Length: 260
Image 1 (tube, rainbow, N blue to C red):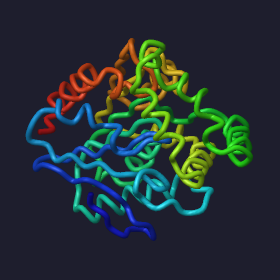
Image 2: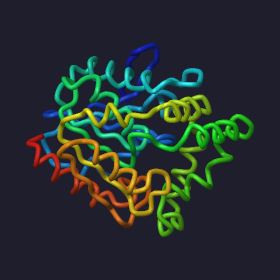
Image 3: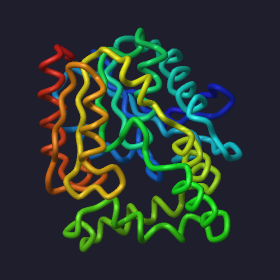
Image 4: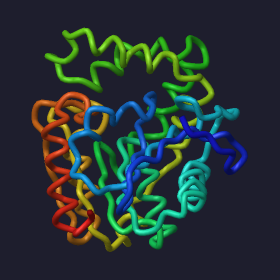
């Protein structure tokens, strides 16, 4: 555990290894453990940085709502604190939105993107407001079963591991989950992402009910020279369901761009 006070909150992060940096930003309702299965499968000679975003894991949960600019600023300040430049920044779901926002703001920090199970815009304000209203009445638990169906393929949902991820979701602070949900609701990066020019890999899951493959493919089409990959037998979190296939895509991408 490594904790530092940045941008008005205590941020929990992990900084391991030496070499070119790869920064991992997790999805809504998870923490840095999202990447546990993938990291040991990555090529050696990389500096691997993970962090719990605001309101998740062991990072402080400030009162909701949050703005996407605040979440991007959190990432920016952490990378400045760690003296990171020219990293590959990879984000899943809301982490992918943070990645797009950071790349648009700080190209000195980001040399390439991995956008996993995300979009330039995710859902509608109306959809997110319905979820926020339900959470305000009944908590995150009210959404949990529906979220599990969106997150995981049918075979994975039959296993015991899904219960652990459901528990992690429902134990996310309400302020953190609703705060980040509000940030997603207010974000449309179509114009800013279309202006990006850097190496980018998009990854989608064939059973993803939260950010379907067509949304990821459309988003990658905004970035000149990007590449799109589909992992068929996975949902919204392919790094959990198919870590070997996921790591292979990352290692190939790192090799192609000369990172590590």
